[in-house]
Length: 196
Image 1 (cartoon, rainbow, N blue to C red):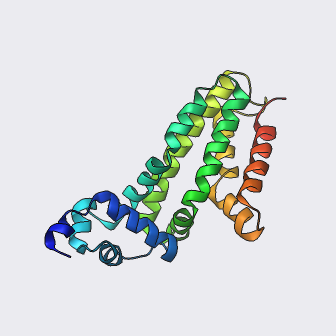
Image 2: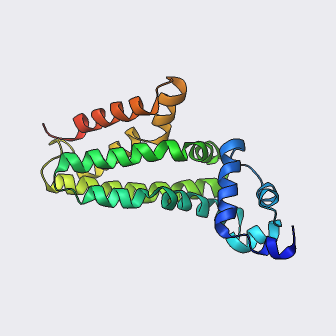
Image 3: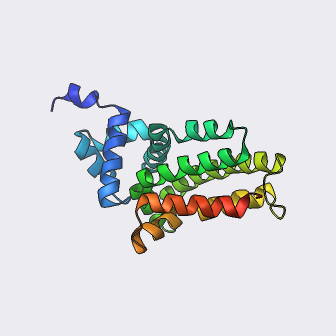
């Protein structure tokens, strides 16, 4: 591969290669391995992302962009009916989780020992918790939440009960298909959070 061809490798090609490697080998894959897969030098990866942590951060943010989760959440929030608003949010999230699970589960595994993996994970979870709070606040304002929930409590319960970890337990340990997981979690959350 010529130097010019190597120089033309884009940021997205690096991120796509990193995603594939992490999905198959784990998030502790080295920058050298990613660079070799793309056919560039390690230095080129660092020029694009600064650090391994910068690469991981860009990787998880790109997943949000590739799969359009923010746009789906925004569309759900526009629903006037509280039940539809919550249901559409759940469906968007539970369709997104299987797509990011191979990488997310490894970031979760590494976060106690790898500060860069922990930072990438927390970056995405912080945004998710903020968005869920906006959702549950809207449900609270509409009088749709069950009486014992505050918007903050409801958002945290939603976040925990629909987490990638819960999804992974139902998928890996229980052997449930994706559709069954989504249906059961959706019904449980509607029953848990909304007034009849």
